[in-house]
Length: 370
Image (cartoon, rainbow, N blue to C red; front, side, top):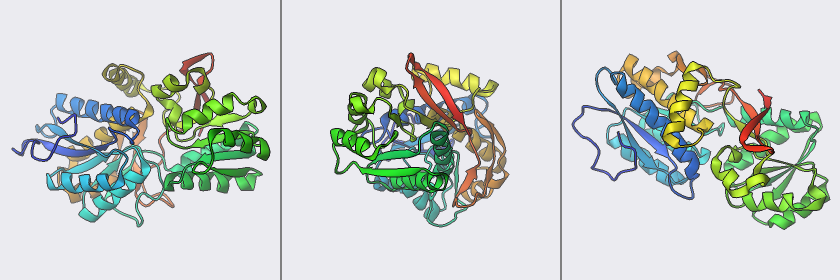
């Protein structure tokens, strides 16, 4: 099993292994911490498949490529691993990168099971080749908007960087909040400093600020500035994209990083499979596993089931998406056609709004479920 990206020519070529291409952000500017968790889940899944006989006696092998949050690099990696004979493609965390990978996989006729990216429009046109485990952005962010309203927030500022993903999230929030009396105020982080954000929040009388920005920059300085601005003591900071999920957030911000609600895709209580996998992931990562690690494991569980049932032929794998029924770590996984979603979609993984407990920042509090 390849556990690190490797240059062309070093993979096994004897044909004995069934290979899966894996796209993961492992270097900056990619979200390296998320990539590490995603890869840990993928690797654990492959390890367990091989411990139980592999795929009809053949070992399962990952061919890992680092996307570094670069769509062009991801598209080139899809071409490369397709040429190396992988049966399917898996992974990716960043939505814009996954969209580029999905377009290329669709063009090549390579089945792609997207683990973590949530952008609704993962492909421009409906495709039979791509399936997804993560909830679509419109689903999760509407649940987050309901949480905001339930918590009494109707004047909501979004500090956003230019991106298809952030723009899509802003649109979901506005479309869901406006008919319910909510207002979304956009703050362009291409033009504002952290201090200027504080002034804008006061001027607009916002009661909540959502961070639609990268981590650690500029998320960390924005949080610090707002926390230290006396007139904003009652303003809630939120991060729907999940930045506070990872240990690096707490390391960067300490107590300032607590009480910042975010989305994560876990049930309130894990079942026996999820609990066992969670323990194994904790050992592998030497820290608490994020929901992204569970997404990686579930990706391999689905692909292994499909490969055992339908073989490694790419067309047969893609044809099998609507017949998948696999017990994952977070519930039974089935794919269907969902209105507005162009790929085969698990509808839906469990969704929570959680934050880090100010009294114990290593502990998460469940604030809302959807």
